[in-house]
Amino acid sequence: MNVVDALLVMAFLFFVGSVLGWCTEVLFRRVFTAKKWINPGFLTGPYLPLYGFGVAGLFAISLIPIHTGYDWLDSILIILIMGVAMTLIEYIAGLIFIKGLKIKLWDYTNRWGNIQGIICPLFSFLWLLVCVFFYFVIVPYVITDAVIWFVNHITFAFFVGIFFGVFFVDLGHSINLTAKITSFAKKHGVVVSFEKLKESIKDKIEKHGGKKANFIFPFKSNRTLTQELDSYNEEQNEKNYEKV
Image 1 (cartoon, rainbow, N blue to C red):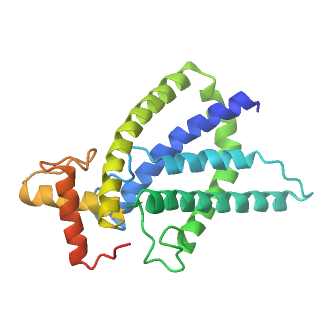
Image 2: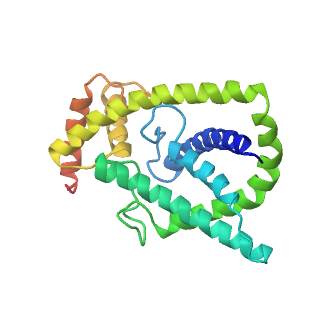
Image 3: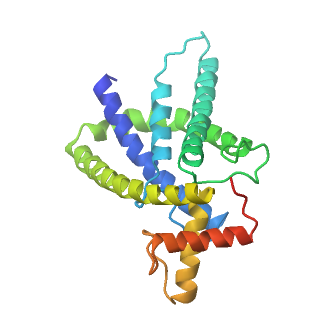
């Protein structure tokens, strides 16, 4: 595979990983955590860049030439590197949002062995299982056939072009929204949980407004974002929310 094909494949994998990651997180929150339909992440659309970078990164790692003389050992080393890389990506992303932006996109605080509530052994193990599947199924049977075929056809430019166009518009909008939340968080000395904030707005709309909250635009309500943040902060203080 030449460099151009590799970059095109990574662009496509970023697109697919972002969308499938979003779908996974929506279902995970509905079934296991919030028990509600919550739009995850800091972007509005149906994609999570963390998963996109992760999948693209896994593909890049799969191209690393490792030759120990034993195929089984080569595979183990590649998979271990993938697993460490995924956990590292998760940790760095978590630090950027929590320490830099005062925003918490996920919370493993109640998970055994967690580090700063950002990573934990359970999800690192799940990442490792994903890496095993990616290495033995996606790389040899999907990327070498279906994906390579797709990136060499005009439909690739159409679908992926639309995705990245919408993605960057969404990114601009979300950065503006995130800046307001970060400003509020720094002013009050707190870390704002995106998921809890969305739940707070959703509950108020459905309880007092008598209508369904907007799933795609979870911050949309009859009140200003500042009012919603003030209300959220009061709720967290009542629950002995720990200030940082």
